[in-house]
Image (cartoon, rainbow, N blue to C red; front, top):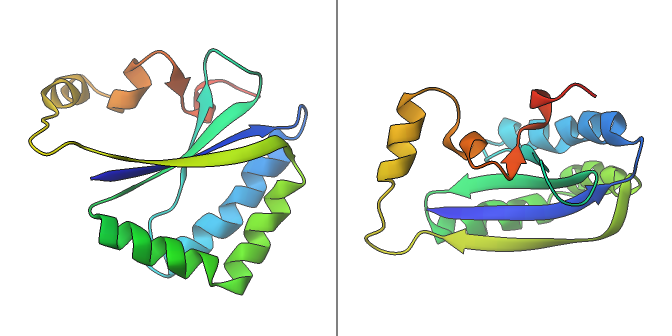
Length: 131
């Protein structure tokens, strides 16, 4: 499993516009059968700091979808529209699960309801707090 994280900070007062604009690239990705981004916000830390997260089964799938998105002019035009609502320079990282790692805690938390990541206390989904 691979998790791609796009770190960004939205300008104060621009969240609604940013979130609306994110629907464009996500719709384009979904229409092609690709993984859309989930939006997470920092519960603690810098104001208006967000993560756009996508998970891929293999490195090959990540590479194929990453290349497809970056070579799709229409999708990239939609992506660039979001740039006008950001502060600073966004950055990315790609995480992989170590061989043999298990997710016993994730399964236990998930069985109590809600997404396991919402229980971490450092990040939460933007819909958790009205804007």
